[in-house]
Image 1 (cartoon, rainbow, N blue to C red):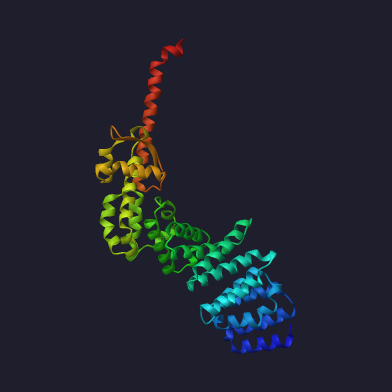
Image 2: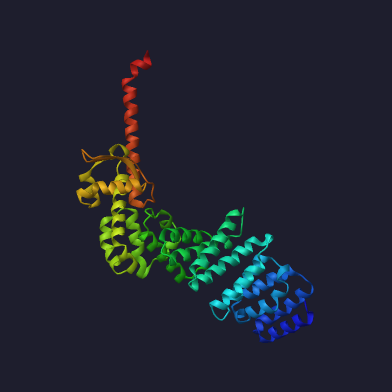
Amino acid sequence: MNVDKIADFLAEQRDQAPEELQGTIIQFEDLWERKLWHQLTDLLVEFFADPKSESQRLSFYKGFISEFADKINQLKLVDLGLKAATQCRDPRERLAFLASLTKKVDGENSRDAFVHATVATARVELQLGDIEAARRDLDKAEKILESFDSVETKVHAAFYQVNADYYKVNADFASFYRNALLYLACIDLSTLSPNERKARANDLGIAALVSDSIYNFGELLLHPILDALTGELAWLRELLLAFNRGDLEAFDTLSGHISQHGLLQEHEDEIRQKIYLAALTESVFRRPPHQRAMSFSTISADTKVRPNQIEHLVMKALSLGLVRGTIDQVDEIVNFTWVQPRILDMSQIASMSQRLGEWGENVNKLGNWIEATGQDIWAS
């Protein structure tokens, strides 16, 4: 490590830096000369976080940080490298930079840093359209992540974010939905701008509607990200809530938005099938357990599905695990024994409260009957 070279580099960068940052660069030289690597790393992280340092980050990484890269925390080294990479001229230069960074931290004692750098490389590969390379890197990162007992949340967050982006590109809506929610679980929503929150809420809502395997939106409906669906996107929030309560009238009112949205219009038939299934599960849920033997005609009235399609609708619900029960094809009756738990709105909670009240009254009646008819037995 050439002392004069480092001193000259820092002097040059200090002269180019805004006045507010020049004192920090002077501290760099002092900490470097004293080999206080931990303090130097923390000061570099602070320096790189300042927007005014943006134009100097790449130069600092190549001309200064790389000289002692093996002496500092490797995960923080990757963090600094990722910020520096934003100053590369184009994605291909960024990919080469990140490939070098990934190789540098590929060691037994820096697996978390290696995963973090590998995921960042996959992100750029996605941007360049190299889907297969991105998948290979994501699979490599996932395998290592699964072997960790613990790892910093930001590493998991980065993986879930890029993994979600991969599935979005490949139109795998269910996998995108799961990974996008996992990403949001790893971050503080306040770190996202209002536009980012709105975009993520929109993508999640659309994915939930068009996925062929997501029929319960409870996790999304409980997430504060949904509060971002306001203004021109308020209809999407209302549509998701309509699905949750199996509200066919609200769905019909909002269905005009489906025909105006390319992806939703493409899956319009599947979305309509979903609302019919939601109406069915809501109809079963509203009934007390002892009143869940429903005729085909009752189901047809509740779901607006033609009578000759009721059996197919119920079989679909059974196969998806939304309900359990048996179908009497001769008498055209379905005996439901269970319905999938769901997130309840206020009207559904009121319905459950009413049923609990009725149950309490029945228990009291049974107790009174036992007391009245069993007096002779108690006396003897």
